[in-house]
Amino acid sequence: MSDMEQALAKLAALREKALLGGGRERIEKLRKKGYRTCDERIALLVDPGTFVEFGAFAGPQPAEFGPDPPYVPRDGVVTGLGKVGGRTVGVFAHDKTVQGGSLGNVQAAKIGAIVRKCCELKVPLIALQDSVGARIQEGNKNIGFDTIFYTMTQASGVIPLISAILGTCAGGIAYSSALMDFIVMVKEKSQLFITGPNVIKSVTNEDVSVEELGGARVHAEKSGVCDIVAEDEADAVRLIKELLAFLPNNFTETMPWSEPQDDPGRQDERLLTLVPSDTKKSYDMKKLLASVLDDGRFFEIKARFARNILTGFGRMDGWTVGIIANQPAYLGGTLDVDASDKGSRFIRFCDAFNIPVLTFVDVPGYLPGVDQEHRGIIRHGAKMLFAYAEATVPKITIICRKDYGGGKQAMCSKPMGTDLVLAWPIAELAVMGAEGAVNVICRQEIEAAPDPEATRQRLIDQYRQIFDGPFESARKMYVDDVIDPRETRPRIIAALRILKDKKVSRVEKKHANMPV
Image 1 (tube, one colour):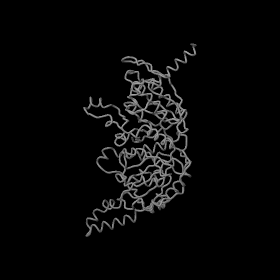
Image 2 (tube, rainbow, N blue to C red):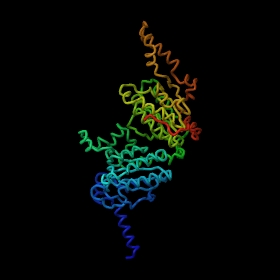
Image 3 (cartoon, one colour):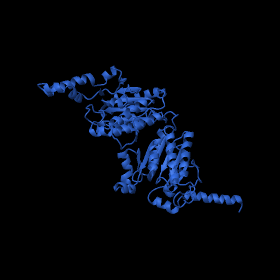
Image 4 (cartoon, rainbow, N blue to C red):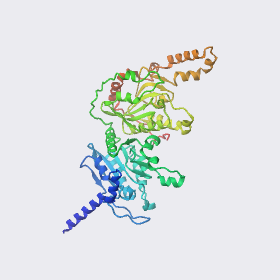
């Protein structure tokens, strides 16, 4: 056998060893539990024949404690570049069969390198995460997560960062995912936490399962960590591809455009009756969005968290837009601590990547109560103000019904920097609703009146004549125009065509200090 033949035989053996990872037995065990291998996940994500792997023969460092790990090429993570729908993306995928996908210095170096390469090429990064966390055997010389945290932070705002949690992930994987823009989890298959159930049991004596501690439902509904919940791994990849289609490759690009199939001049008669004029009655804001957006498609982000506000992507005349909307069907559409966090983070993402923001308003104000005050509604609520005022992308506000109190500013009023404010004829703009205002301002007059209820009603009517309706606000230039609800879609599209090339010079400073 020639030297070349021997070298090729060695290469083939190493290639097979890399593909087998921790061995056939561990791969089969993974599959029996309903999970895919890292290579299968990448194949599901990228266009066939496009994946270029980096660091294919990288191996682990010697252990600082315990036996040295065997040499397994790739060291538990596959990194590279491929195409998704014809667009180049960076990918890294943990191999759970190799030391649980644990992260050591070599694995971290590979991940850090692909993050930096994505920033150089200005293409999105997708992480297929399935790791137990830090590799304990490397001890204090393991600075892997430090490297990843730094590189992720540097990449933030440069390229879109998407993390898919596809198994039980712990420790630094949670923090590295939190530093990314979007987190996708799989129902009953994904768990994400800092410390696992065994550690919690030993420290606090609390018994909890991995699903109860950090499952998709917990993070989608309670913590707000999860942005998108998938039914299975295939659905997770499908949703990542759909999300990616709404996003630019990097911060230098304008909003993505795809050939629209929907008539830009379309008007929907249902908008005349969808929103009740009685402000005490609720309705589903998603139905309004479906009547306005291209093909009625609203790709919602954090659908199960802070349901009193809606965030997500849609298209108008083929252009990607970010949507912020009050949801009267939940908590009356009030703003609270969680809604403020959810909304402000989404606004800042849109602003970072040049995606216009459409704001649909039906807000009675901030949610009152001791609990909200103690949880820091002052600090959290200010995030919405900050995010909108800081954003330089095109901003269009549509007031559908209520626009009361601090909610006016928090949902991007004219003085807060929105480019265009449109109001429906039934819109009400005031410091607070008529009933509440009269009860506060005229309490003594009502109590002293011979007929308190009649007096109260008369004062309410007077208040409404002065403050209710959008026309007084339009006269004062707080509203740019009052429109027929059916004109909402074509009027927004006309404005976007003008505003899409908007450029704003920022005030010179190092950076602002957002309330966090």
